[in-house]
Amino acid sequence: MSSAFHVEVGDLLTHPGSRRDATVTGVLEARRDMAAVDGPIRANLTLESTPSGVVATGSVAAPIALTCSRCLAPWVAEVEPSFTQVFAVDPVPDTFPIQGTTIDLEPALRDEVLAAVPVNVVHDPDCRGLCGTCGTDLNNGRCDCEESELSSPFAGLKDLFE
Ligand SMILES: [Zn+2]
Ligand SMILES: [Zn+2]
Image (tube, rainbow, N blue to C red):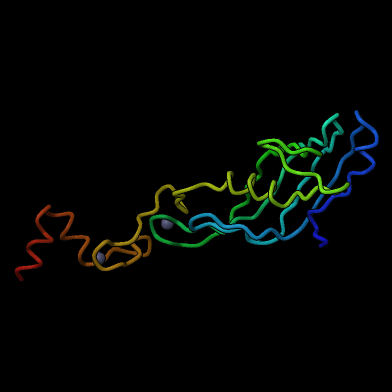
């Protein structure tokens, strides 16, 4: 199975100590909580041959569709995690396998990109969120219930008795 994230490394495996650059672009399917990769990602990597396999270092740029945790507004932000992963002919924990003479960067990229996704993000530090009573987006203006809640901690009770 061919993938944009498969990289042929036979030349490196036969030349320990050698290194070369590799740029990989492709669409990565990944999501975490309310965030998802949105569009193609790009990885600028240096591949270095070691006695046990290949070490890939560099950086990744990935557009992420985010949702404001206060007002639920969607937007897209780019994350740019650095990347260091080890690919081994005989995989041990914390390494990825080399299949024949090919490395599959996809699972490694998914790990790095998802680890860089911010959690509980707000679209603006001053986001006012949604009214917990009526759901109005308070960034667009006030609702009637907000006034009464601010005026008294018992305003919600008062509403029950009106
Ligand atoms: Zn917001
Ligand atoms: Zn309201």
